[in-house]
Length: 165
Image (cartoon, rainbow, N blue to C red; front, side, top):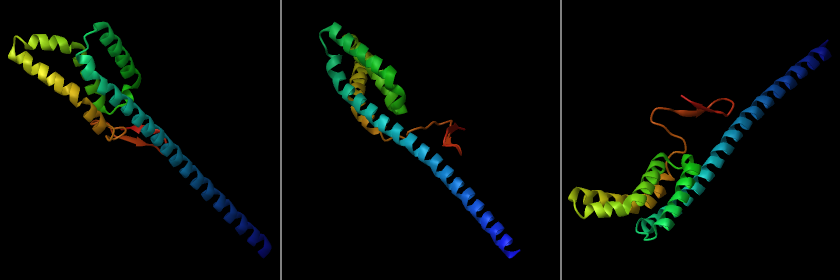
């Protein structure tokens, strides 16, 4: 009888170890998936911010570009890039980038308007400052939290999937 009891206890211990092992494996697998997702998103975000930074350095020259066709072609390419990559930019970088594209497009008109009106001169100066400050804003934005919202809290559920509260 003691052999049967020992065998039963051994079986229970083996089953318990197996269950604990499966739990630990499942837990680390979920954590690993989450970590892989975060790593991939951070890597992509860094690449997109670097591309945005490069584009932002071209914009002051485009604002003064004499060849309107060349300017419009470049801006069209940059708007297309923004449409394809904006969700990887930080919130502040995303909208400032779009605003500066528009300011760059209209900058010569702002200069013309500023010649006759001091309010428009202020708008033109503010526009130029926005164009010139975009690279620094993008540089700062790359350090913003990956996923954030003032209203929503983003978490990962027990299966490693994103959950927004």
